[in-house]
Image 1 (tube, rainbow, N blue to C red):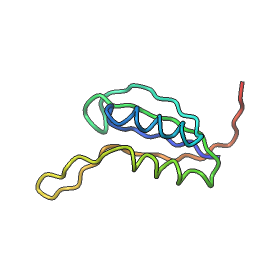
Image 2: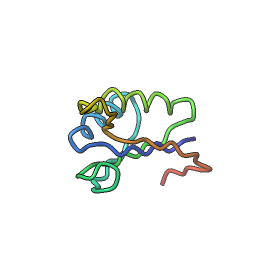
Image 3: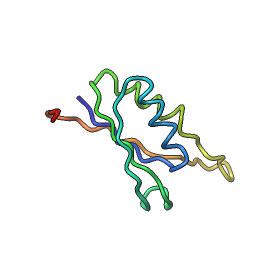
Image 4: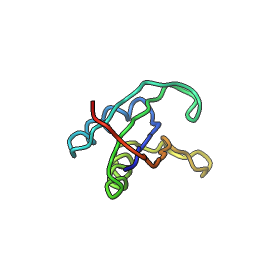
Length: 91
């Protein structure tokens, strides 16, 4: 099992969560600020089976836009961490 943690721009978070849920994934959104994007952002948490982690990453890529690069520099609209999960329990 994997825990996918995505930090994305606020304006992209609702669309990303809606699409994750529409495709059968559970998702939790936490409004956060600072750090990577230096403005208001959202952290999306999703627990998935190992083989589905890439599906979640693709949904995030498709729903979170990349701002235009200035001076041909690369920019990003977020960051994704994929972490191994030793155990998961529903309560």
